[in-house]
Length: 359
Ligand SMILES: *Cc1c(COP(=O)(O)O)cnc(C)c1O
Image 1 (cartoon, rainbow, N blue to C red):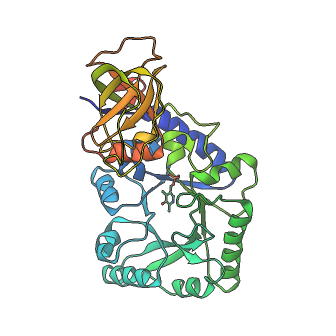
Image 2: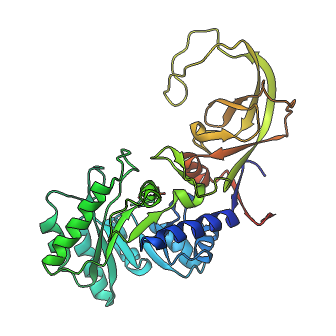
Image 3: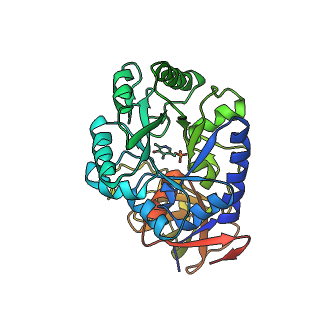
């Protein structure tokens, strides 16, 4: 059954414990984010076994999947709900990140009918230019948000790094703390300052995280041990959490560069090709439909990814010590984008390993 994605749950659990240990020293609660694994209940369980109390996901469908699988946790929707899905989210979520008063009002109205409350973290944009009210002019909007009773303003939050790669600096997060302080002075109780994601972890490592930031929503670091915004592996976490295995369907000696005029590939890309003479090229039954090819890192020595199209990836195995043949399997580590797509592809089989046992 290939292509096959293997998730090592015991390593993810260990990463989660280590991050919780660090965060606890700063009074920071970790929301374990499952969106990169499409709300996979096995991963949510690993988080919870390691001490996570709140699970965050960007998709209502994923939260529903985890609830149906019997995952017992607080669920946080980390992307603002679509107005059209508010009736579902009123049932499924315990807290929601929101950045529009009209959305909050619609949620409040829905909750009022059900005589129910949900916590809202109102998002503030500190310069990433994705979601949130603009930090220089957000006070009125936040004060309005505090007036709802059923969609109840619990805190303020921000997200940096994911969209433009804007770095979460101490100064930026201090700004969020100031906004919370200003709200408190105006009589609005702010309990949660949801200040970050994987890209923000380095502030705890450095010890420069502003006091009073008390929640991080983290996916990548727990599941991959990496920080793509910081272009680094998180030094106190493990990276051997996930592997992708793909089967070879052809091995041939061919020139490395087409000797013909070229335009664009199937994805409209112009591909830079280096002429390295004749090379041994293996084709894998794996493609852009299954994985972000540029995010693959071969584990097997002497294997290099050349290029991919929808269903084929060519790897150069000339430098490998082995003579590869069709039917054999090449292994990869994945970056965040590659894992996101692999997990989302129905063609990739998902396996879960716990202390060596695979199921
Ligand atoms: C994806 C996301 C996160 C988690 O980000 P990681 O980089 O995976 O830790 C947190 N908050 C929001 C709003 C997100 O969209």
